[in-house]
Length: 407
Image 1 (cartoon, helix red, strand yellow):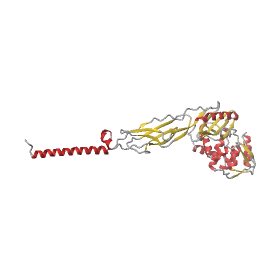
Image 2 (cartoon, helix red, strand yellow):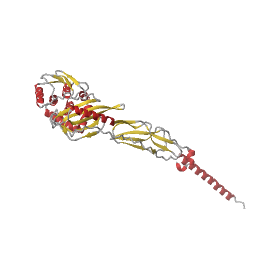
Image 3 (tube, one colour):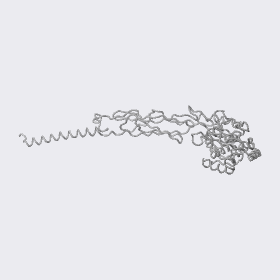
Image 4 (cartoon, one colour):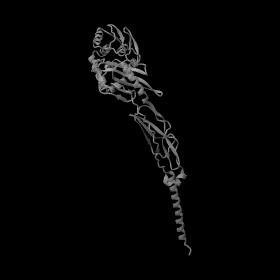
């Protein structure tokens, strides 16, 4: 029996709606897969190379105590012997110089104000002789610039000039000592105490660590750094004064101060410029309690020779170096590379650690920042951005339609 017109109409409606449903489903599928966001992919991180350098063993003198540091490096790099407080003899004069320069600053090649010496300064001269201290001549009515007076105090290590300058700057030795105590506290030199201006007193003491910090303060002061590097100076009325530091100019030594008393022994606070690649590091150090200055100088030269190889220029990150790779299901890939290069001068076996952080990535343009590499050297951290070395583009509709579960 043939279907009725009503049945034919009903069947046609079902067929039409079925086709429309299929079309709707197809459109929905193609649209959803074609417009869906790509799932971000994690990068495969490249394990950074180990950068920590071999240790270096300084050749310390067999007697006494010492410590070394360097400008731009935290604290003490290495030390030997007793590290407590001990008499420091004429190294005390570097405290005197720094404290006076806070009250009476000098800049550049400025000679500073004139100082007229009096009968009181002549009396100070004879008192220093009576103490069996080192002195330089003084004449009542003599006029020197502040810089010339500093050169006379520091080069021949004249005890009388340390007293005269302290009185000139502060009015009395007691007032100077109060200012010195404030200076030492302000600079964190808690192991240092000065009982006089010259160091002839055994109660003027410091620790090797504090003396390394003191040396950094001296070399950071252009006026003092230039004076302690002078082998000689021509002073009006007095004549030529000669630096007591016989290591000046040898192996790059350009300072800082000798010291000698029965209690302290032979002492030297020193600074030396160490070439490292195309850069220079200022090494500072101190050795206390030597038997004689000639012997002390020999041991310090050996120490410097042993320490110099410990400074190395290390490439922390090379520009363009890969630290990770992104790979996509549609077979595109790009590396995360260092945007810039970084290097650092490193001392001996200072720990160097590298941390790589890479963000998950879906799509990206060449040069986009996708993370960073942090390199920590001791207590300092250098951060370099990581960028894509190639673009990761959309896979396109055909791949999306044929890989619905991977979008």
